Amino acid sequence: MITALITGASSGIGRATAIKFASHGIKLILCGRRKDRLEQLRQQLSVETEVQILTFDVRNRNEVEENLSSLPDGFRKIDILVNNAGNAHGLDPIQKGNVEDWDAMIDINVKGLLYVSKAVIPGMLEQGSGHIINIGSTAGKEVYPNGNVYCASKHAVDAINQGMRLDLNGTGIRVGAVNPGLVQTEFSDVRFKGNTEKAKKVYQGFKALQADDIADIIYFVVTRPYHVNIADLVVMPTAQASSTMVHKD
Ligand code: NDP
Ligand code: 8X3
Image (cartoon, rainbow, N blue to C red):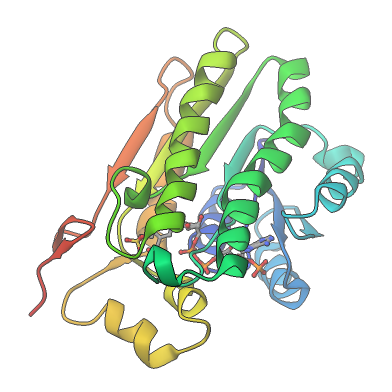
């Protein structure tokens, strides 16, 4: 049976991917900080597959290592890693940027992804197979006003995705990125620190991508025949042409 570890499974894209994978019988290791959410999801999905939850902050290297080394025998062989945990914090011009926000984005989106990968890759190397899906963003392909550090963190994910693919070439491990444009999740609630009115406005006047749309794509990516590796995929709502051009009613 295939086992997938998904970071950031407590909401949005990660949660939708967990639900999609469970419906196809993929065994799950679901990670995040909000234990209640993960526990609720575990209960919901346990009728379809086996589920293990791990509660840790990806910023904390010790927590990452301890949690991943504590997996029970039946969950130690990880076939798919979805490096999804991440968020934007703030949307300010660089000269007004908040250093705590910058730290959060670099520590979670970049260093957290590296810590989790560092803990998972040795097992994949040992088994000579595995599939790493890095969730990047259109923000990793172009920079938009006030996006500065979030865009930098996602450009780093883009570089790490390419670097991983080069370095793991020939090991049997597939590496690829899925880079969405605007997806309606809790992303903007986090970016605007709970200002739901401001968050809602981001998705008004057009049909944004939904978390399920990205989950469908991730499932497609991981179900290609072994010789097919989707290296880098960009997906936007039809109404979006770039980070700065969104056709609204
Ligand atoms: P959500 O806010 O809905 O989900 C973010 C997830 O990341 C949550 O499950 C959260 O879990 C987890 N997470 C955040 N910080 C940490 C942390 N320090 N340690 C562990 N887990 C953490 O947003 P999305 O689903 O939209 O975002 C998922 C990914 O998709 C992110 O990498 C984001 O950058 C990317 N993305 C999103 C787009 C969008 O428009 N929504 C577009 C392009 C890319 P918890 O809080 O429980 O820890
Ligand atoms: C999320 C998409 O445009 O808000 O990565 O940066 S955007």
